Image (cartoon, rainbow, N blue to C red; front, side):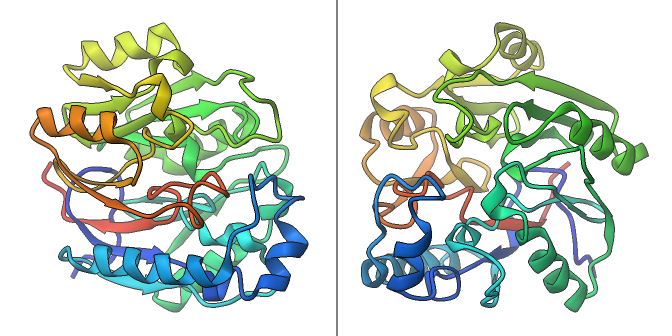
Length: 295
């Protein structure tokens, strides 16, 4: 039985790793201690975050997937609710990241312990001076990888990942990311790009290089643009649970409408406490580690 498989971001999710606020935030005192230094836009309300996350979990479980919960780890911060970033999943195992955000440096070790506990191989780790975060890594197809080069992931980390993946990878596209709001802001490649189907992507083109947009178009990928008014509300951060079925933060009606006009089924959740304040949408909140690939 296959236990790992992640060189695909749109096929049906079969297994996914998440971390509840009860294990990430722990309590209101930890939130108040850490939220400012982690550049949160506001103080998450612990009680509402837990309630909203319970509903988010129910939404995930409504699809045919196995939801795994990461345990509390006192060596990690409240940012550990965003399980997507500390590792990369490929078809042979896990690659541990080296986080570009200082407050998140202990998260890869926590994921290492989890994946080792379920007998999933650790293929390697990104080491200094390399930096790499999962939010910058997008599988265009099973053999093609796009990686954002910015403040969170650098060329040293990108080269290390390419070396670890070896023959699993045929083409790697480095996508330069802009300064935007500066080093302290969270700007990943997946802030600007979400695969919806193998030939349909959601994009915020203002923050993507023209050459990369043409690369996608030349691959036969149709692009749906997120409007300016819904970029800050995380309209472009979308979790595809299966082809043309997606989860989006509530409050992005124009993006939702544009997706639905392309035949996409859109499911929403309240992200006011668990997403918007920490700048982590449904993709950031989850780490799919097995998809029923249709390639």
